[in-house]
Image (cartoon, rainbow, N blue to C red):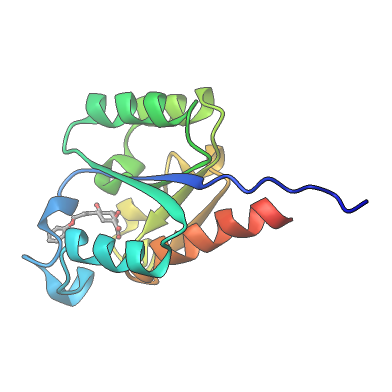
Length: 151
Ligand code: CA2
């Protein structure tokens, strides 16, 4: 008798940190000209079988709350912590304390920018990092989580 495989909808949360609400409105030479809301629509069209939640906050505590909430209910988290990536011990502790795997995403290549962006306090507690591939980094992160289901 063949093995029964139950396919549940994969639940992924995207968490974006400070200033990423300005995507598409400022500094298009670094971050592109598409707003995240528009890009999210495209992601939902590309991955209709994924339950995709999106949270953006400019506040560190709210990002920690979002990690706590998604961290025990969702299958994976894509986190672009923005500037807090380089400064926040509290965010690092939150990532370390949850059970869902977190993939760090940066739109720009942080290693090709100012030295203070070269180090991320959260990388070591994340599953991995996707850096410098523009908004496509979020799609690549989703593909990673999809690959984990069948792996
Ligand atoms: O490259 C990334 O995704 C960053 O996480 C973006 C952060 C920056 O502090 C990190 O070093 C790298 C900044 C987000 C600011 O986003 C803006 C988007 C459009 C216009 C202005 C800022």
